[in-house]
Length: 255
Image 1 (spheres, rainbow, N blue to C red):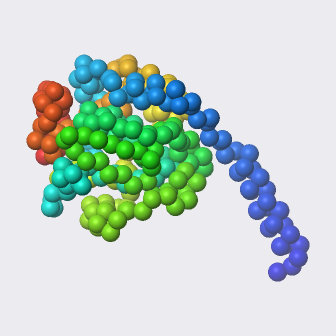
Image 2: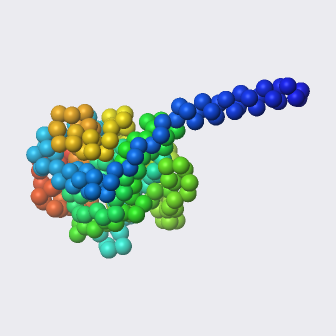
Image 3: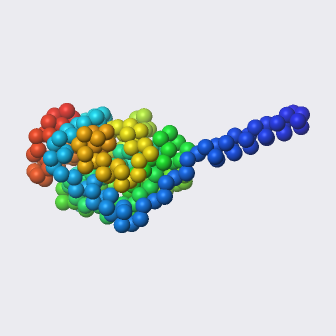
């Protein structure tokens, strides 16, 4: 290949990377620890009346029944298993309703803020990560695996048993993947990350307190669907959560 052609290709490639560097949006500054706690307190203490007002909202019901041996956690309780990655914008979106729903059955600690990849679709979607999170509940166990960080570096690996679950129920290989006690499973996000695009953690949390907001219809609606699936595997416990007309009606859509 002539030297002039090689040089021309090199210039084009260099120009591509320069343009990409300038056009890739920078990730937002992470909120302070106190601000993070305010956001978490807001989304994990939504009023019961708001869940009932939103219902399914604009969420897509991706939760489908599956068959297999019941999945139980290390404490013998029904297990909710999550597989995702920090770079993934759909995982970023789905963590919001998953945290809200799980917080109706137990308590998180160690949740940290992060954003999805700056160079993927829906860049820098603001969210949380489960990488260092702990969860306690008298009703369920929660196990999470974040496979890659936001720059797609290796982070956590599923066990052989978890890999088998994914192979069996997530045939498309999509993430996020959530298994509800091997009775229900879902792949993908129940709403578009575009619903929270460009919004800060605090702005998203504040919007969830307004049942008519786009964000509440998407995220609280998704949280209600997830809650219904969890209620199905806990025999409708706790009653304070699972006996509401909203959750009972959504449970019927999961059959």
